Length: 344
Length: 139
Image 1: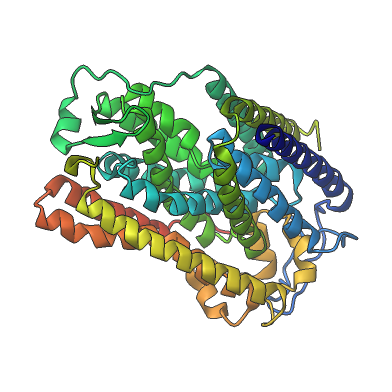
Image 2: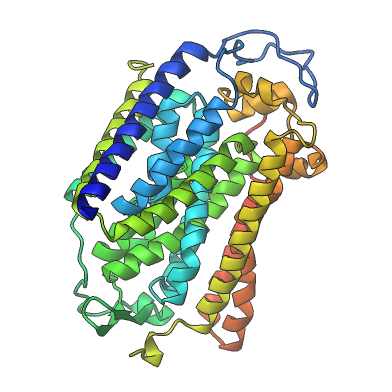
């Protein structure tokens, strides 16, 4: 009965998410069209620019009350929080393509909020993972300096590119992530014949308690330099698209560098808190963080994560994984087609 | 049975404790200021009803049209309900810097030169990102 209940709830959540997205897309295209040229609007806080031949200006007034979108954002973030935990993905990789594709917010603000969402999730998970010695600071710190510096570059590139270019690139990246999720294997305990010189010099190694087999597992890594090089690309993409990059961190840490899967997943989650911090500051300083988006998104996804953790034990991981992949496929296609102006 | 070797290192525990406290504090502040925002306790820089006209714009157009602050300019607008939320956002975004600063003395004490240097470099990178000096271009 518990299995049926949790199955039904998960299916309902996925259907609700799809309906919410489709409804948001419909309402967004019906009510919010950016006007190419119009005089700038005035506000009580800001001032009208007397020289305003602005390249983009205020959209015409919509009949949709302002609170509908933040409320919808909270609900969708809550559902994504549950699905992200069950599907073993970060919040950002689901949040950005879905909110970017189906809500009326500009992709700059969506990415800023996405980074904050991924950051908040990593900050929440970090303490427990560090205390249990599943997330390794020795593994994370050398990787983080590379990824966080690259994320700054990615954020600056992302904020400078036109919206449609970002949508197309985001859509293609999300579809690539789907391919990685479908094809990439995983190794619970990779074989590392000999740690490389750099990892030995830095002391990137550890020992943790693997409860599933009741044993202490010693681990070390190899191919550190190729791994660090890949983290440059990962950092750039994380900053450019506002994604958490956990989808890329784990394969590199686990399959390339040889860290055990649990160490890789936990360290990846912790690593996001560092990588996303640098990118989030860039978005914030460039004015690409909207409180009306960030607060309900963070609160929604964190509440959803708490629920997701509670039902995780009762859920079937494979079924959820397929559901998450389907959602990502849908969202990735939407982003790609939106960028190509095929599905507005 | 726990093995001493499987326990988290001193710097991990320091990092974890600060992270945990700071995260909950930041979230509490963000939730509080957001409630104040939507219930109109303070006047807003952008009236809430007008927000839908602007949230479809690129960030640089939003800033340009509304003369909204960038960088740390939001600090001057803490009397506005919308910008008050930036306190919680800044707390969450700044937490990692604080954690790194907290573990640097441990690396120094342990004479772990490599990690000491990397940790200092990381603080420098994050402070650079937070400084507002990195810009994508004028508008």
